[in-house]
Length: 284
Image 1 (cartoon, rainbow, N blue to C red):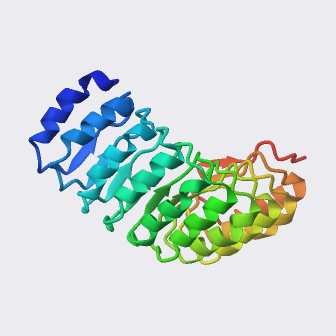
Image 2: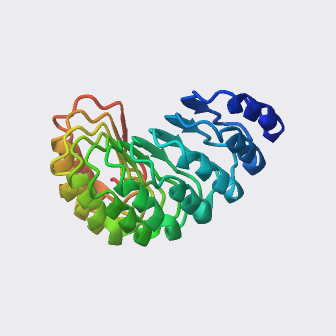
Image 3: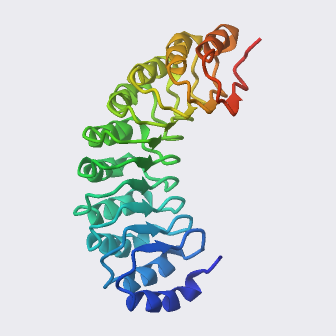
């Protein structure tokens, strides 16, 4: 709607006298920090929210305190969408503080917020007391290995994940053991996004080991990870017991012909594929 900050006062006025409000969708506007602060003020007396969507609003860290205040008195919250803003680590830490007493979250989206590893402890703390969590979107940040390890620790008691997005976080192979541990006790997982993380063959092998008991995957993204043919056997094994797979992204690695042959063998019993991407793999 491209509402922008100018309309925020009026929207906030509406919110202020609707204290039974349960779901608020304001995504894809251009509220910015100033508008988000006004919206938060309008929600001061609202305490029954189950869903908040403020994604893609160019909201910076300046609004995080006010958003956190809203979260702190909405402990029935189940879905929180804050992706595609620019909260950075400082803002993410404040949001996490606001979620300290929220324990019914099934979805958290903090993707594409330029969040560095400095916020990982606080995000992990939120995850640790939200064991009903099903979907976690943290792609497009800069958590690096240190941050990803902390996030994984926060997910130790979460076993109902159906979607995990850690795309483009510069994780590297160092965090692969910890991520694999999370995968190993989330056998309901359906979508896994780990593209753009420089896992390399060693990391991909560890991830594959973590997926040994996962058989409901419909999407796997291991693109742009500098994975060589050495990991192909392990990836093949994962594919062989996920016959519901629909989308497989392995582009931008270095599987070569030998690796691609193994991947193909792993897909012999998969018949629901709608997309396979093996481009840029030096396959002859």
